[in-house]
Image 1 (cartoon, chains in turn orange, yellow):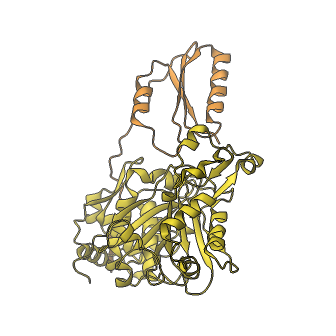
Image 2 (spheres, rainbow over the protein chains, first blue to last red; image 1 turned 135 degrees about the horizontal axis):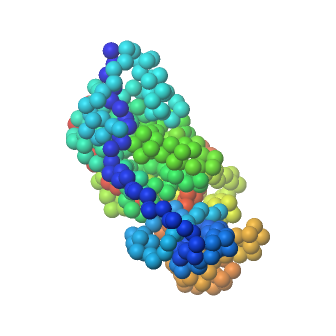
Image 3 (cartoon, each protein chain N blue to C red; image 1 turned 45 degrees about the vertical axis):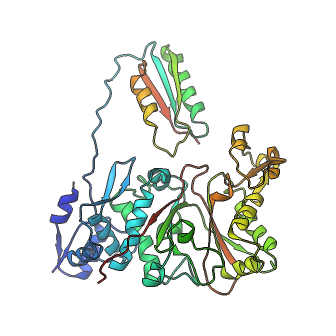
Length: 95
Length: 363
């Protein structure tokens, strides 16, 4: 008989984040953009925002850029997103 | 879900060794090669020798908010084939990689396919029988192979950086199986890394998120300039030319050619490499790469300001000579050196170091 430990641990401080409340309408939304800093990410999210505006109206009121795709989002930028006066944010990866 | 505490209590029982090996495969605990079953006896012996509380946190993966306990590290070290005497290097490497500047998560998740290079310097190399000579980068030495492999197994099992799930590397990297090398001291004409880092009596690790391995060969080089220009040329190849850091491992033969003239101190060698590891902007433009901005250029540091002349037409690897980690390694014969570029395109990941805490008792 061989008795083994598991090399896997799953506990950690994993916090389950709740989803943001769903929007009842997309009409005339205040849109925020967050580029992750990859090449062309800003182009992709701007095009996506343009599609929303064409179909539903609204405007882009906030444009943010994480600058570095490989690093965690800085706390102050997360704070800005959380406090942003927008109806929804669009973020994307480009390359 | 298995918590840190439960991982100490909830053991698994199987009938025999072959069943244990297959269990490890089926549980998804391996890197594709068979592992040593992490038996209670072997894991506890690893922890006892290191005199570590099993629940001590030795590494943290900030973005996933997962941490690695000594117990989890020991279980993975056993699986990788480590002996207890190898474990202090694993612990030091985990601590070094957990430092903020290393950007642990990015380097384990990126399409860039970084391998985590563990460089060991100091007396522990001889004490545990690491191989700093021929076939430095593999294979054949248990300590080199098992220590490097442990790091990879921890990424898989503790931080859950699974290939094609959370590790999105485009082509992977053979160094992801294992990449741990010691510095060769007996053919090194310059101060050793542990001395340079300020620990003359201790051993250290330096960790580096490395891109692909470049073999640098020039058997015609007879002068320091010829030998080092060959290295600088490799460092400036367009496929990996960024302002990230570099690791250069000179072969003993090449180091001997360079240091035959004693005016070639290590500092002079590093300056020479940095000053010559560049490409003209026209070469970058030819492949569609952006060149430096004025702000980029302001960050360069040269040992001699005169070298800034014409800088608006050049793009250097790194930002200063300090961005190059250089040491000697490999067999006596052959002008085969190595250059390993940073994984990061810029300065997203910066190499880190840690002193290796010596083991008080060895089994």
